Length: 472
Image (cartoon, rainbow, N blue to C red; front, side, top):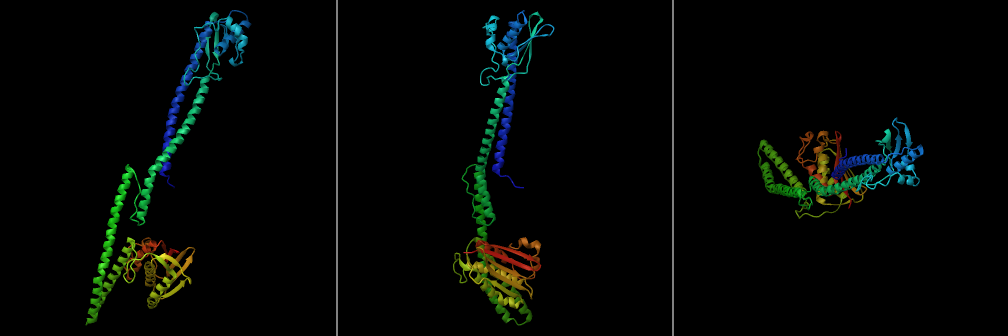
């Protein structure tokens, strides 16, 4: 499942908060408006009833009753039904929208409508922000008692409150949508500002995890995130200092051990020559073997510490480290094969070559490439039983040079393949073979230092290492 980013989550959070706020406020606003307009419509009907009660219908013929009903409807803008005491319908004004004010003006003036200057119908919707008018009609009705047992029923009063509520709801929807969009945008921008230093911290920690201890988070802030970045950078600085100190110690120790080891091996060699019994020779040879093992270990530690410290190897004459040059991998592969050929022959292992005829130039350090080839070929010959074979190839693949060292040896157990490049790791099936478990760690460090990669595949029938380097 893909994780949603901080920017998206914060933008959604801001938008959700804005939407919830808009829903609450909109619900309250529309509810208040609905009650307001409901009271306004009731007040309008009551006022209309008072006006009609103050101007009762005449006791004349049907024509006069119809004219009175229409005049009352015109004055109140409601539909007026007139009933007698038995409930019989005497007159119906019809819908207010169908009336002709001009035809009823004389009747209205003659019967008192419009002459009561002290009485005035209220504005249905009131005045102010939410006042207004419309053509909608209300479903409310109101019965008005009149003289002689008669009564009038008022209906279809103006219901402009409905139109106003619809308009308010539309305006609320537009405002709520705009608020949600703006909140989401604000959340995204705030999250971007927060995420920027977090991303810088993540990138710095990833670089440190890959071995670049000089990585630092570039965060120029004084808030909590800025203090976190400062703390991270301080921690990284202390870690780099500690690791560099340890590397220098290992390198210096390995270097300093070399001199007494050389003297010890010389003394043991003299002691072996001076030995007079087989037991003495056996003890001296065992001591020489341990000294040689210790010498190989110190050399490997020195090489690995220099690689991890980022310094180039000194050349064979002990000169200063060199910058990367254009080296021919094909020529170096032939040279490495020549160096291991006699040992392979003595071990009864067939050494086969498949090396490109043309040059394979790469931008790398010669000594480091020699170390990669030397370690891989040494392991292949060492772990291949008599009668087996080692295959070394160097070829071009696209814009890369590929070195392959394959053997028919004992292989690497499947449950230990994840640790094969670790320091001092030795598989359980090679415990009887000489070695210190640093060769493949040196190979990996040297290849990656030269911008390449190393992979392998192994089974009971053998192992194949594949080194890929960019062509220069």
